[in-house]
Length: 516
Image (cartoon, rainbow, N blue to C red; front, side, top):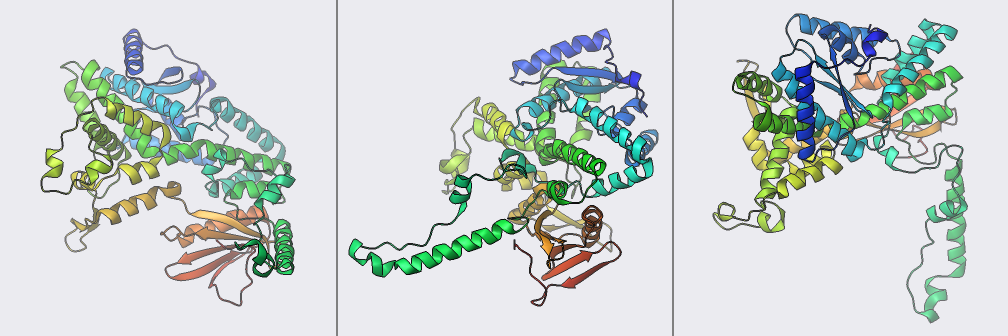
């Protein structure tokens, strides 16, 4: 894999260095704000090596990185695709340029990268990420290699396989919440504040003892206190979405296993904002590279090459989902609508014939201000939920398609705006992963772990559910169960370390401590 010498920062050729200075200045003049950005020149093989590591020059040793490298190398060799840009969310940001690219491509990539760096620095969902992850990944690699030297590569790699199979079982929103940890118990005031008040009906003073009898009030207070005490003894005291953290705190892990699971969890949290903002991030970068290139950095000899590569970036065949295309079109639509005042209650209530066509409310500059605000606080789900309009669906032909089994041609099966938008949101919610919670760590009073799938409109896939159970069971060591709704039936999937089974949930089955 990549040698240590390739990690050294390479100096850009004079023409690229000059272009970099100009593009950086132009990006700042538009209001983009980014960390220091360092470009490195690499050949295609070195870029493939770094890309196989997720963009980092140094990662822990694992076979999946080798497989990814082989896949990308074949893709490049057979002309099926190539990497034009790669940038790391870090302070400073590191970005890679491929030596064989034309000067037009290099300028496009630089403009694209500066917009990504602006997004990394300013978008809310990246605000809790480790800005020194370049060093963090190298540290993770060192720790894993030490475990390999002491434990053996077979055991460590097998455990890495298990951890990577469940790396999605985190709670990306938890980094924005302050919760008591295992060694940080809730204070008395927290506990007291969490108890529900005794039911008291409003009454006149002279009727108080009849409307709210003292004895009844005391009985309810005693019952509620007993219920609160019972819940405090349950593990977990409430459903937990961060399954990896729960396993770190409660599973019988050896120190080296705990360290590896911690590494996988830390990296999962680092990468999660990228999954949550893929459409926005790529749309923002595409918006700015097209703006800067077409207005500032193309001469007549470069227009054809630029148009060819840009159109390839935003090409979206019917039935496909291209985050570059959808993201840039949404940002352009927002800018246009806010520049012309085509938003808000007053505009939406135009119901007279020809009303929207007669609308003439110019607000130049408001659109640019609005897209910067959107870039700062939204993720893909609320971005599409709020700004994808019915007109946009029709203009981009974001319909639902199905291939005709007789002719092999794509046919539109739905133009329903609400259905299309709902389907898109399902696809993006939680990065397309199911919501899985720990609801009982002592199921059937036998130390078995009970997980539950929170249904958000889409069923889980059974084969992935079983594989997830196997990974969790390997760490928990006792039998593990997963409750999930499949079609109209509530099912219970179980794995005891040897065999898996599934059954319909019925009244005779023991109930877990919590219900979702």
